[in-house]
Amino acid sequence: MKFKARLWDKLDEGKVKCHVCANECTIMPGKVGICRTRKNFDGELFTLIYGSLISSGSLDPIEKKPLYNFWPGATAYSIASIGCSFRCQNCQNWSISQANPTDDGKNGFFDLEGYSDRGMSLVEMSAEKLVKKVIKSGAKTLAYTYNEPLIWHEWILDTAILLKREDIKIILVTNGFSTPEASKELIEVGIDAANIDIKAMSDAFYKEMCGVKSVQPVLDTAKRFKNSGIHVEITNLIIPNWNDSQEDIKKLCNWIVDNLGKNTPTHFSAYHPDFKVPSKKRTPYETLNMAYKIAKEAGLYFPYIGNIRHEEGSNTYCPNCNHLIFGRSGYTFTKIDITEDNKCPNCGYDLKNDIIGKTNKSTSQRFAFF
Image 1 (cartoon, rainbow, N blue to C red):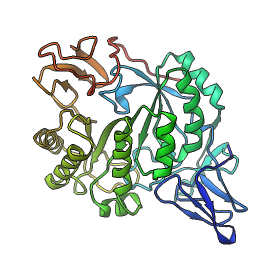
Image 2 (cartoon, one colour; image 1 turned 120 degrees about the vertical axis):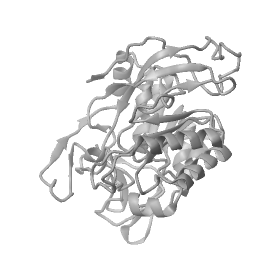
Image 3 (cartoon, rainbow, N blue to C red; image 1 turned 90 degrees about the vertical axis):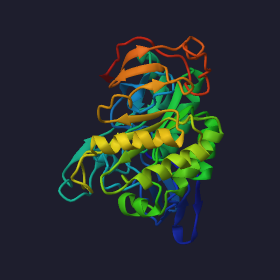
């Protein structure tokens, strides 16, 4: 729905400048920013997606976000809207990220060639109703996910305040392309965890693949969140011939070690061709195995491999003695061996700063849509 935006400045000639994402768009009257969800109405900035959801929500394993070291085995109530601050050629969720909202935020439409006749109805929801749904579901975490949550800034702030009162943990699955002002507000409202997608370590990649100027705002957000006590996990989608060299992967791993810490879980994911198909090849097992080994050599305690079967890459090992703490097959545990106070049962290593929250030791996972 249409709602007065936060974090913007009035400029001359009815223009406005948005400060929610690092694009910091200057928007002419009657126009929208790069995200297509924030519009200038007569010199005033509004978000068009406040409380506008693609569905009432779904229940996912928290590992699907992916978060492997935050409340392991928990169920995440997942919600999404439409739009994104990027225009990634390889987008795996392009059917929502590249959609445009109508001015009232009730519907979505496309201005992509071949899809102009395609639309969608959006679900309008109040913050209070969302919280009631989360409580009724039994989920203890809420994830803003699938499209880019940072452009949903006002909705996140208002819902997070209510969720915190119910002790619901709040998760962002994000490209990290934030501003210091927006990040500060998210930190202050009490975001608990974030999976941040660092797509590559080069500005050239971000310009050509994502349509934005630089990776630096993403790196700054990751550091800002981590330094503020938010649990951070990193995802890197490896695309053949784009960001799959040893040099690319070493640069990322070394940056994470130096700036976020060795105990930062890092997920390397396999790419499959979709949307504008920058590569026709899927990521081969050998490349992902190389990334896993490079991460270990760089000193990362918790490298993971996603979207492809890997003998070690789904598991969590004690960084002190290499004891298997969590064995996983897909999103299901095959083994859980950790003490109630999050210590390694083999060597006594204290994992409370590495694995956050209690583990749900039920082997069943719930999948549902509302």
